[in-house]
Length: 375
Image (cartoon, rainbow, N blue to C red):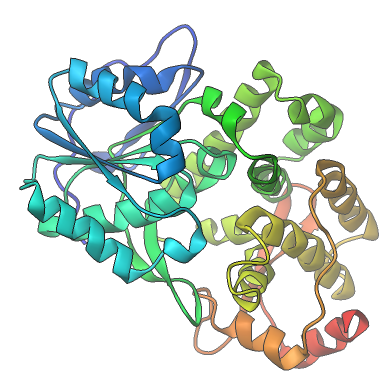
């Protein structure tokens, strides 16, 4: 999908927020992180040189919590705002709901200079970005992230798309947002399960790229669980810095960016095997990280300490760490439907130490022997 011409951005920094830049040439954009940033959305849209209609894609719960404030902020800046409500949850990530969003854009006569705003978590962001990439061959979209998973991971990097019954995120496009806004105040209204789920992605960044950050999480996890503002700001900012650096070097996941999938090869398989109902994303990723590190230890790539530190930290968050019982054929079959399969070979991110991972092809016979201890 071709990106629309990147609007010119103005100053987005305020004393209460921080800005991380994703450097992608003409497709570069800022991530604004801080409390209350949602209420400045009209200013942000103006700073990008946008005008006209704005379509806010969200779910009924978020529309009730933030709809009035967001509409007021956007309206004050002279934009005409429409809300497009879709159901909550992973099962909404289908072509049917992309089509529904496009139908609403057609009905309200959206044009190429119109803008889509994704107000929500990863599901809303993925489906909104995909709709934006398709409509009129691409219109601008902005991520307004309200979950921890979205603020530290899914809103950054331009991955958009929907699921297929056989696997997660098999249909989609790389399509960068014009801006990402992460209002850390919105995390206060997250259901506890969603909040904890996001911590799996946070821990992932320490394992793949920053052992000092992993140590910070070990030292400060109780304060993070209590949602102390300074710690939350540090967590979201550091995760975004790491992802921005990786995406800038490898936008389309041809090399380095694959390390961001740590925990996801097994995690996505567990989500699919559970019909996208048993686990929410971070829960599956947490289990995936523990067991991908166990597999790495089985292959003598990492020490037992690497496994133990991850498992202990994930357990401190209250996330599950045990893999559910499935036959190996079902488990391996689900892994083979992952989008990271190349020429029929499953590739997996495996840790060598805290802060260092590598991508490796998996031999099914070796994985079967390792998996036998869990079945």
